[in-house]
Image (cartoon, rainbow, N blue to C red):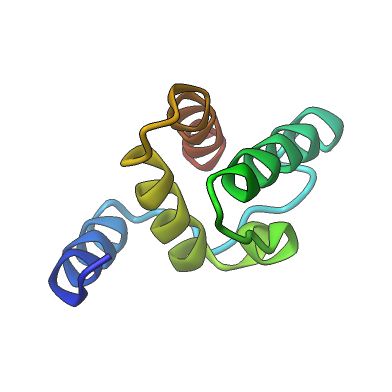
Length: 90
C-alpha cells in the first residue's frame, strides 16, 4: 500500500467516525473470532501475516489489512474482508 493510499484510507476512516477498537463482545465473540481466524488463514495463504488480537484493538491496522485484502486476486479473501469490515460497522 502506498503512503498516499494509506493516508487517504486513514482520513476516510477518521472522517467516518469509526471506532478505534473492536471488542470480542461487539464481535458476537465466537462468530466474530471465527471470522477473524478465517481472515487470518486466507491472508496467510496469500502470503501475509495477520495479528488477530491487534485487529480487535487497532482500527487503523485492521482497515489497512482489510483494504489490502480487498485488492487480492483471491475471491474468498475479498469476500471475507467485506464480512470482517461489516463487523466494524455494527
